[in-house]
Length: 246
Image (cartoon, rainbow, N blue to C red):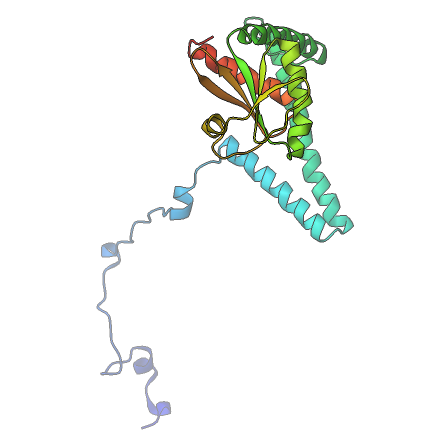
């Protein structure tokens, strides 16, 4: 029997093993499942960025933009790098203005010297205090200048060491890895002392030495300028003061 011979009522409500008829549930018994708000695990675990993280993101964005502009210096890429740069510079400018304003309106706060004129005055005060400390230090400590005659850096450093010693009242003793000595400097050739203070035999080296306690403190590794030497000695003096040795 074809489909055309099946009564319409049977098509609308088919029965038999090919069809499964769900039991009819009264409407009043049908309960809709309660909707629960689902929160994405990623969203739930996200926290607001800290100020430090936000600042790092800005820096990273600028570095990426700059790197792209260097590798692909199109006008668009360069302009984008400039925008990132200008944004950071504007933030820094705003911060500096607010910082200065905060210094002015907080009279009870111990201000940090920032103006150029004040910095020069403070620098002179610091230099005077360091000079006084060095002259006091020279009463207890001398200088040992370890060198070797064929070292070009030693020849460059020697005049600076002599100048520093003369200006601050230090006695300076040359410790040579050879037979030569620098003009105006007393030198000795003592392998055992040299190895004791400079076991790696790196040159030039400059030490503070206390003849009473035999304490030896390195103050210069290699050839450095006078400003760097003064800075190193400032830290050494601070250390000696903290240790109660000065």
